[in-house]
Length: 276
Ligand SMILES: Nc1ncnc2c1ncn2[C@@H]1O[C@H](COP(=O)(O)OP(=O)(O)OP(=O)(O)O)[C@@H](O)[C@H]1O
Ligand SMILES: [Mg+2]
Image (tube, rainbow, N blue to C red; front, side, top):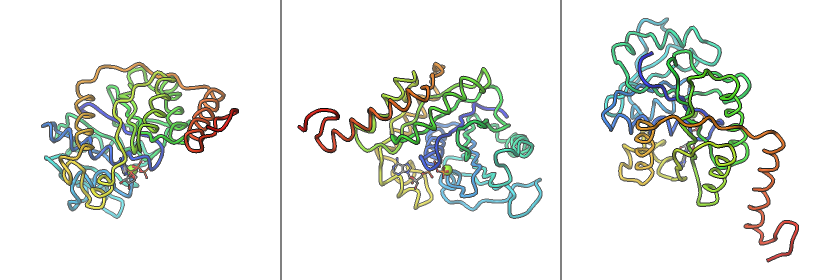
């Protein structure tokens, strides 16, 4: 499929769909033709980028409840919802979707894939991604999301095609400098770069309730500017080094160390030392 592909992945619930929809909105706002493909029957990303517009069933496909849906959205973005028709393991359907005449006619410059399957041993990119996808790793500052991120780095180093690149880590839902420090320390340990640090913002959930992107519902919010900056960084971005995952033991030590730091900050009791 034509265009530059961004594959948005991370642990479930980490904020992938919000990042996908708002990144799509920011790219569309910058004048690009954006195709967003969601593979999730909740339709979160495409619904928000389309502003809750009515989806139509994709023509030229067996018509039924699980026919992929499409709508035009913010600044003309094309939103496709593959739903349960195209899920992990259904590569033929992914190929058919990527080759659909509607997609070919649209000639997207940027294709965003909002993946529902988590990085793990069997991780793979959608079949329509050729010519080197750019993987965006969304994480929050909790141990489990960072553990999943570590698994993605392992995949990048062992299974991924040579031309698959990491566009960077998108740290999402951060509450304050401690969260930023945790993610940037993990990135530092693995040699990854944090491409965007997006704060927790109640306005992000408000936009979700409105079935909109934040760029539509709160265009002047500082988080909207953070999404725009992410879009600019990615369109201008050069190659990033492939990060090295931490070995299981090192990952455990790293997590325990942060557990100690957080506990010390919370309780004032220095680990293995005196109370302060
Ligand atoms: N920066 C943020 N600030 C506040 N709320 C956020 C932020 N990012 C995401 N959320 C909220 O977190 C919830 C989960 O986000 P989202 O649906 O994007 O996650 P996801 O990774 O796509 O989940 P799933 O794995 O289920 O597809 C949503 O209710 C969303 O509004
Ligand atoms: Mg999602």
